[in-house]
Length: 263
Ligand SMILES: [Zn+2]
Image (cartoon, rainbow, N blue to C red; front, side, top):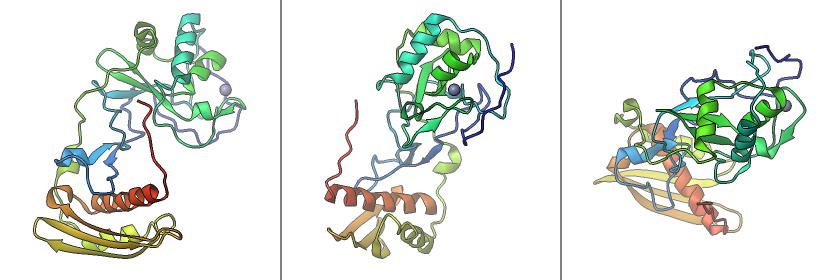
């Protein structure tokens, strides 16, 4: 084992110690459709970055979230490990949590859109969560991930990790809190850089809250008039994000922007 010289400049890469619980895309309120919240129970209101596909059978742990400020274990990798890992990191089937922009390697000048996503590898009772840069770290910087991860990649033979587990939403998120409706309005208005809400009015009615909003898109101004049921109003923040995302979804539909899933 030796340590890679950390001579290259740091570019804000996120560092997590190997095998710590994955938390990069934490459980958070998920976006609503134009007609309101999805599902029918509070558990449906929270998810990993809103991506329903990313519910794994086992808890996720971090591997390969390196940066130049922390020591990196190294070893010569086996060719089969490098080949499998590279294929996984480059395939659409594996890549998730794709973010915009070009992420750079903290150890060299590589900058590539290929780097700005993550993969999951099924382990023994865990699912490994790694940035797609991990293939480059292994191939070009001899990064030695934990042996259990190497074994898991070899055993997977390139298969995606098992999904379909129960999404575990922390108890504290499911605890209903008194909602500050003025704060909800203020939060929705605070998104005015990308959400031109001219008016918003929230009125508590039997069984829910009546949301009326007028949105001044330059070409297609529109109004929202929806009753959000009580069960979907858990917390101040969560309702504000829900309402804002509902308005944004309508805005995107009117603009003709449609999102399609690869699967
Ligand atoms: Zn590099």
